[in-house]
Amino acid sequence: MIWRKKAPAPVVENPAPVIPETALTIDALGRKCPIPIIMLAERVGEVPMGAVISVLADDPAAFTDIPAWCRLKSHEHVDSYELPQGGWAIHVRRKY
Amino acid sequence: MAYLDAASTEPLHPAAREAMLAALDVGWADPARLYGSARRARLLLDQARAEIGEVLGARPDELSFTSSGTQAVHLGLLGALQGRRRAGRHLVVSAVEHSSVLHAAGVHERDGGTVQTVGVALSGRVDLPEFTGAVAAEGVAVAALQTANHEVGTVQPVAEAAEACRAAGVPLLVDAAQSAGRLPIPPGWSVLTASAHKWGGPAGVGVLAVRKGTRWRSPYPEDEREQRRVPGYENVPAVVAAAAALRARAAESAAENARLSALVDRIRAEVPRRVPDVEVIGDPVDRLPHLVTFSCLYVDGEALLTELDKTGFAVSSGSSCTASTLRPSHVLEAMGVLTHGNVRVSLPRGIPEDDVERFLTVLPDVVLRVRRSLGVR
Image (cartoon, rainbow over all chains, first blue to last red; front, side):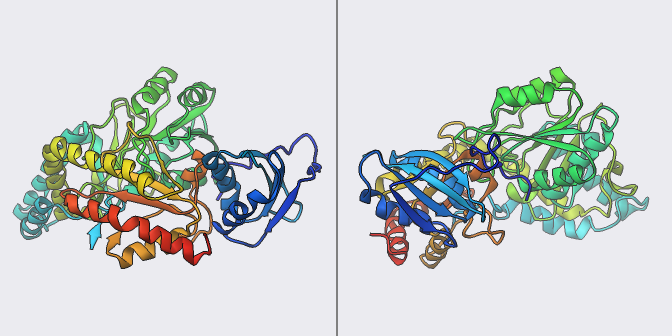
C-alpha cells in the first residue's frame, strides 16, 4: 500500500542519523500491537522523571500507536528514528 | 444478537423487500427492448432513477446504476480523470478516503498520473486550507472528498471544498456512501457516488451521478447501458428496491437521526466513564448520526470483537489486528489516533435503546477480560 502517511520522522538531512542514548531500551521487535505498548506502560515507571525510554518496534501500528499512547497518557513522544534493520526506535519521555 | 454494524451494511428496509418482490414479478424483462414487459421494466427503472435522483439532488439523465458503491467510485474517478486528461494528470484526495478511492488513485498513478494526499486533523476532518491550496495548483485534473468518514463518522467540509474546486475549475468527486439516505447531499459535486445497501437497499446497487457539463469518459469498453456509463445488464428489481428504501429513509430520517444521534451521544459519554484507558475518536459534533468509534488501550482488537460476538454484539473495527492486511487502518493512522483496540459501533435504523444499554453494560467486563488475557494488570 502506497497510501500510508510516510514516516514523518527526522531523516533526510543526515542519511545515517545518530540515535541518542536513552535511560532504558525496550526491545519489542517482532511483537505485534498492542504488546509493545503494554511493555512500555509496564516499564515507564522504571526510569527517573524526565528520562527517555527507547522502544524498538517493527509492527507498523507501533509507529502511530506509541505517539498516540503518549498523547493519551500525557507523556512526551520525543522522536522516532528508523532502524537500519527495519522498524523504529521510538523515544518517549516520562513526564510524571 | 444485537446488530451494531450498520456502517458495513444496513439491514434491508421493509419497504425495499416489498418493492423487490413486486418488481421481481413485473420488472424482470430487458429494459432496452420494445415489447410490453420490457417497457414495464424500463418504466420501473426510470421511475426509480427519478426518485433516487430527487433525494440525492441529481437529474435522472445524470444518474446511472452500477453494481456496487465501489464500482461507482472506480468508474466515477477514473472516468473523470480520463475526461480531464488534457487539463492535467494530478489527482487530489484526502488521506481518509475509502479504499475504493485510494485503489483507483493507485491505478491512475501506475498509469503515469500523480496523486496528492491531503492530511486530516485529529478529528479526521480534512485540512481545508491544504485541500484548497492543493486543488488551486497547476495541472490538477480531479479532486475527491467523502461526505463523511466510514471508520470514525466525521463529516467532511464538502461544500467548502466544492467551492474551492469550483473556483479552481477542478471537478470534485464526492463519495457519499456513508451519508446518503441519512444526511442531505452537500452542494457542489461534479461526480457523486453512493451505495444502496448502506441505506437499507439491497446489495448490488451503486449510484454514479455525473453532473451535466462535467467531462467524463468511461475507462471501460463501450456499452449501451446506463447512459453509456456503466457496462452490463441492469438489475431492475434491485434498483426499484433501492429507490423504495431511499424514499422511506428520507421520510424517516429527521426523527430517526435524532434518536440514533442521542444514543451515539450516550455511548460517547458512557464508554470513557465505564472503561479505563479509552479514547472516543472522530468529531463529537460534526459527525454521522449513527456512528461512533473508540479505541481501547492494551487490547487486541480481534480478541475484543470475538468476545463481543460471544456476548451477542456484532460490531466492527478498523484495527490492524483484525485486518488481514497486517497494516493499521490508513484512516486511524492519518488521524494519529490509536490503531489497535478499535471498535466501531454503527446503529441500524430502529435499533432498540435497550441494545445500546446492554452493550454499555457488558463492555467494561469484556475489555477487562481481554486485557487480563494479555497480562495487563
